[in-house]
Image (cartoon, rainbow, N blue to C red; front, top):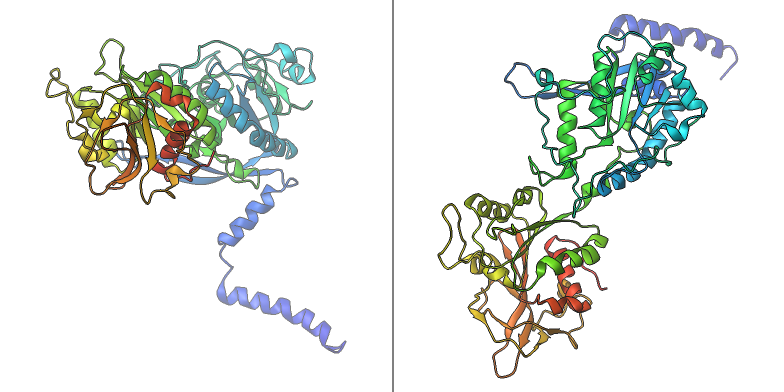
Length: 536
């Protein structure tokens, strides 16, 4: 191109752009523009935090709550992150485990916020002693007290007029461990995974708000634990910051709830957290995700992916109340399965307190013998199976709810549970004494449940159950035999609708001393869940 043409083009191109704007109008900002704006504002040099805040609104008093998102652009210099009670240890083992799991991701979020000019306020309540002489502690202490719209309290409970009741029942403290943890106050400091820098502040009181006012901070991002307790009630947390007129958001993937799925509304722990987060979005403040500050995916607890196995135990003959919890701890939890035990009441063997947890179960493991639960409890079992979720039964489960027509008023039985669900035909058992020799059923050698099982020295230690004939749609896996009697199936699978069913009539206390038996049982659980079995 000649040197004479280039200057001419430099004059013509801008003129063309002007004419295009006059004829077509200014270009309308679109998704690409918004993303570009967000990316620009997200840079460390912009000084602006772009937050996608989700809240819930009603179009009318009785209308359903609907999610609504708006984009907030906050001045980083007028924003604080409050890290609520991320203690080194909580009284509940499950809570401590989840805090430890969340802390590395939270530390990265805090580091990014700090880098962009946000004040970080660490608030490990009642743990000020380790920070007594630190610059972070002195920073909070030197902020002068200010008059507040509403007095800042050490604890701010439910506001019945504003929010009503929480959507979960946390009256038992919220521990979802088994056995439940003894309550106490084992915390000593903030978990050390979260770094505290000299320019940060450490406090557990109204000092947090005084420091905000001293620094001209109007915006607060709350993260930490627990949503239904300290995240709402502490003097530096949501309720009291909202009362003071601060702009508040909760970082919804950087929190957890103290909730026990054995309590209403009988949902998974992670679902309980989600319900409290929605409660906060409805009644208190919007929520944001950590992706607004980092390029990482939103944090999710590993437990959210853990299948939940519920053991229902109610028999006194084979001591499975002792053997099954040990089995679960040793063989299932290391496989990434979460276990809950529901046991028959010691004073009323027909009653199974907490059976409502079946609503959140991924697998029902049944070891019950001739019990007639209250009608509503047996209905929970029926509803669970009708939903298409898997069932594993052991030993007396084949006559779990068969009480021969005798049961108290208001209670019920399920005499056909064995043929309808398990696919067996239990009519009794042979006498005690001889051990049961086992062999693999023809054609079952490659079945996933038998993976890694060596039956050459594998025997059954209890009496041989008489369960023949099996339903036509069962798949026998193992047969057992004793002298001078026909062989009987002792382990099989079946499909009942969408429910995978595995049953074994083994389960004598001495069987649990066998590695082969424990491995068989674990593989049966994995197969029923649709997961890959193991080969020891």
